[in-house]
Amino acid sequence: MLKLAKRYKPEIKARIIVAAGAARAAGKAWKEAHAAALGAGFRGNVDNLMKMMSRKKAKAAAPAKAAVAALAPRRRGRPAKVAAPVAPALDPVAANYLSNAIGTAIAELERLRRLYKR
Image (cartoon, rainbow, N blue to C red; front, top):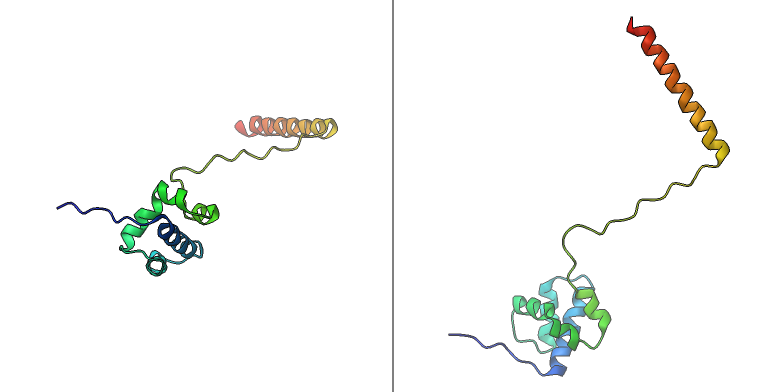
């Protein structure tokens, strides 16, 4: 036998959403949010409350958008890419010094390789 969904008046549904949303925003568990929703007139179990809070209708019916935004599910998957920090450009004098130092080091390594190769 198919069970019909429980229907709530808009004002009661809004109270339920606000009560449960405030509890979840405060960092409480779903059981505690369920207890708050029961006090606001909710007649279902914890699973039904979770389902109610995840629906778009619940988000649209909530009077305060901040309470609903706190309950929005987090996106799964990879986090967004963060641009790599840009290294500051060297001034020409420092770039020239660095280039010469690297060139000298490479030449010395080549000389040592030839020396110890024999």
